[in-house]
Length: 60
Image (cartoon, rainbow, N blue to C red; front, side, top):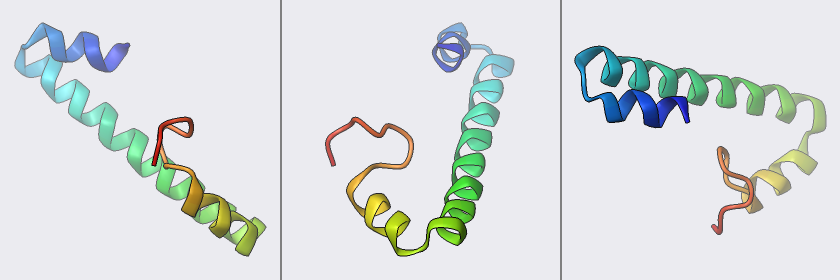
């Protein structure tokens, strides 16, 4: 909802904030994936192939 609110504002600050937030979420997700691969090994690889990174319940 924060991302949508920033984008709807349409200001440079709103769009910049939305972009910064999106980059932060993607970076955090990739760091988390790296950690989980190290902890869970092949089991996480199987899971990651079946489930999208950011929206787990979305169809692949």
